[in-house]
Image (cartoon, rainbow, N blue to C red; front, side, top):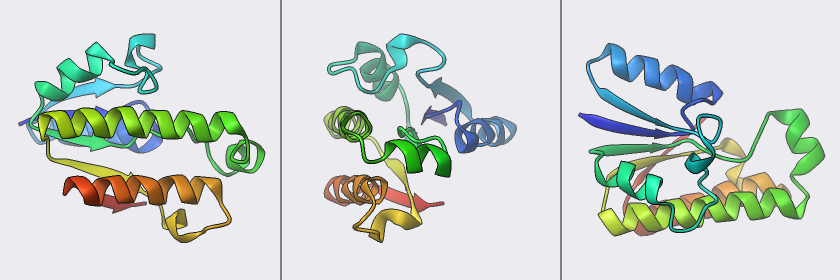
Length: 138
């Protein structure tokens, strides 16, 4: 199976890529740290389109987040919200275009209406439900 991991260099993504490879899957890695063209905030991203189209399944792990200290400092900024809204809008649009099965990695914070991070994850869950995808809480 050809699997695409969005956020492949993150804490969860890196381990998931190793796990999938060890179980015989072909893994395509997509992460902004690999190449600036692998930025999910880019609208009409040709690299994303091509990689999604060529994949059998997509793990959507990417998010603008860097742990609790990062959230404490940045989650209430417009940059944080814009980054996450852009990457979700662009990614879910491409997943819908190619009708690809996927899992969106959410968070237990998605029910915390006082947290911009939680609200953003809840929005991702809504996108996921509208597209018939799955989600994983971590």
